[in-house]
Amino acid sequence: MSILAGFKQTIEQPIDFLPLEGTDYVEFYVGNAKQAAHFYKTAFGFQSLAYAGPETGVRDKVSYAIRQNKLTFVFTTALRKDNAIAEYVHKHGDGVKALALMVDDAADAWEQTTMRGAKSFIEPVTLTDDLGKMVMSGIHTYGETVHLFIERKHYAGAFMPGYRPWKSSYNPSETGLLYVDHCVGNVGWNQMNKWVKFYEDVMGFRNILSFDDNDISTEYSALMSKVMSSGNGFVKFPINEPAEGKKKSQVEEFLEFYDGEGCQHVALATKNIVETVTQLQSRGVEFLKVPSTYYDDLEERTGKIDEDVEPLKELGILVDRDDEGYLLQIFTKPVEDRPTLFFEIIQRKGAKSFGKGNFKALFEAIEREQAARGNL
Ligand code: FE2
Image 1 (cartoon, rainbow, N blue to C red):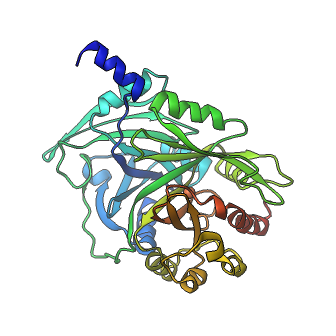
Image 2 (image 1 turned 90 degrees about the vertical axis):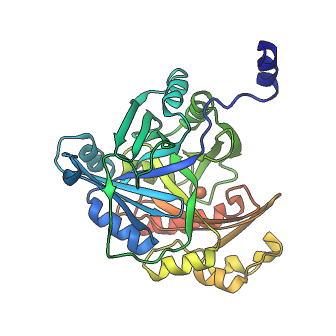
């Protein structure tokens, strides 16, 4: 390609300097990885995948990887005090440490982002075992959260070098969860635009949607949100910050109990939300409930939908429509005792948005929970 042709391409379509192929895995730092892995297998229908710990030559920590379709979760715990994992859990409780992203070239991803101002977390490192090699690198984002870049095209093992396959006789059936749809970060007062700029400048993301406190406010509290999307749209990170209201917003409650900025929720996609949520509820996953009046005029608000309204009402599933279609969504209560991380289950039927029409009903439901905790 001539220099001129390259120049023309830059003008018409900026080159995606950080092509992301999707989410590789989500790593949680937790107080007890063995029990966390068991909970997510039992309640969410994940399968055992891989294990790393003293038996595989890792001396100071233990990790369990579990998988369901294209979703991989890793739970890591410290074996001793006085290390970064133990300090993380002491400060934040159980939470998301790493949002690992699939790339074709992990060394280049690190180069491209650090030269644009990212703070390095792990310099590119090649990990090898009998089944091939993987390259990994990482950068810091908001709070103590990091993005890892994972290049696994030359690796044929179960998960990654350092892990051994984890075979278990306990294999609860799956619940239809497919992949990560988006991951939301909560940041501090007046920090949203700083992190929007970080994703734009350092990772080449675009701001595809913005919500201000007029969109997301109830009688008591408010928040603002901007959705950042990778160049190809495979990875989406909405960023929330609190806004002034009469009482404490859910973002402020998170910042207080997590003790800093961090990942608020991970949205998990399904092709059949009624079946998935029926399974999850029967296994003990707790969801936020909106008042049943939400369903009285549902189809007047959303137009005709394929699903029967009655099961949606019974399960508490919300519906919202945009120009391109509609989506169904529901939110779990926090999955640990601190009111911090939770999950969203989402089924998209054309819609590419995030459920703006549900914000008010949803945030009122969250506030009822906050009030019950004495935190509103
Ligand atoms: Fe979400």
